[in-house]
Image (cartoon, rainbow, N blue to C red; front, side, top):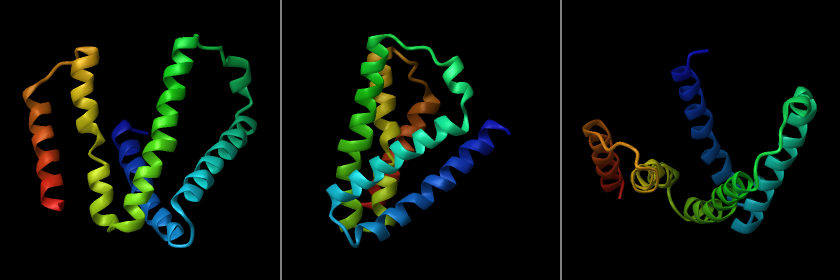
Length: 139
C-alpha cells in the first residue's frame, strides 16, 4: 500500500482514538486512564510477538544508547505526555484539545533543526506558520 494512504489510515485511526479516550475518561481518573492505556499497549505487544514469531529469529539486541533513547521516548510519550493530554482532554473540548496537542511536529521541527542540523526550508517554515495559525484560531 502507498505510504500516503497508510499515513491517511493512521490519521483516521488516531483521529478516532481521542473520542474513545474522552468517553472513557468520563468514568475514571486520568492516572487510571493512563495506566489502562499503557497496560493495553503492553498486552497488545505480547500478542504481536505471538502473531509474528519470526520476530524472535530476526531480533537483534540494540546498543544501550539506543535502548535508553527509545525507553525515554516511550516514557515521555506514553506516560508524561499522555497524562497531560488526558487531563486536557477530560476537561476540554476534544475538537480543540486534539489539534493543539497534535501540534507536536512544530516542536519536532525546531528540535530537529537544533539537535540534528536538519534543513530549514521555505516549505517547512510555511508549514510551521500554518500550524501556529491553526493553534491560534482554535484558541
